Image (cartoon, rainbow, N blue to C red; front, top):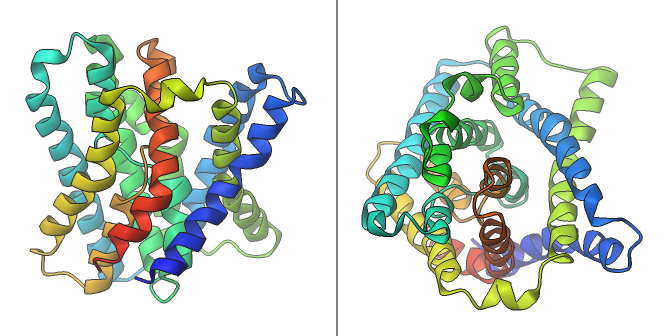
Amino acid sequence: MSFTVTLGTVLVMLAYSIPGFLLVKFRKVPASAISAFATYLVYVCTPLQILYAMQQIDYSPYMLAYMGIALGVSLATMGGTLGIVYFVLRKRQEEVPYRICVTAASLGNVGFIGLPLLQALMPEYPQMQAFASMFFLSLNILMWTLGSWITSRDKRYMSVKKVFLNPASIAVAVGLVLFFGRVRLTGQVGGMVELMGRMATPMCMLILGMRLATVPLKAIFTNPVQYVAVGLKLIVFPLVTLALCSLLPVERDFVRGVFVLSCVPVGNLVLSFAEMLGEGQDVAANVVLLSTMLSMITIPLMLMII
């Protein structure tokens, strides 16, 4: 993929964070308001982003098969990497930064950054946007189960119920009902879903900018463990995913799309769960911010491979 096109796309997305940074830095918006923005993102923008992506396709045996493949690939690559990194770092799991390192190694920002990248870089293959919703579903499944346990070291926070009863999973379920029912949202309803779904990426980056304004820059760049987590997510995980997908009897465009999704930075969900579980919030915030900033360099370079 073109280095300049990819770099330009990433830079535009990162530019969305600048207003958030300035608003908090100059005290036009209090830092305490970040949680309200995040709530709107999780409960409104995210579900509609997923629903809009799934509305880009029509039912066919081909689409059904590839959605199943996308779910299997995403669970295998994310879950497999999660397990391997946990095994390698198992003796350090009493230390919170290493727990965050495990979850951050494979759980990426497949929705807020992955979807816009696919839209910009692969407009000729719009079905990949729908396949990306399966990656979002896998992300939620893993975070509500293995991710919650690794972060908190407490099995009480593993919730099968919440795997299915969360905004993203509900949106996928609604999208699948419409998909199988061959129902297409049109008119004002379709326009509303598209508009609010497209707000997800700017809102996500706005929140990242706001968080960046509250975090000492030194803390972001001076912790070696954070670089380990970011290196695993931005370099090792995409290469492992590409190697696995290259062995599958699937379309080349599907492999390219999966590789794009694997190159995105650490997902905001890692930070959200750290805050919710009360473990490693600072490290999680630093890893998300550091990986997002470094992805400006790594994503264009990694995508040159394909």
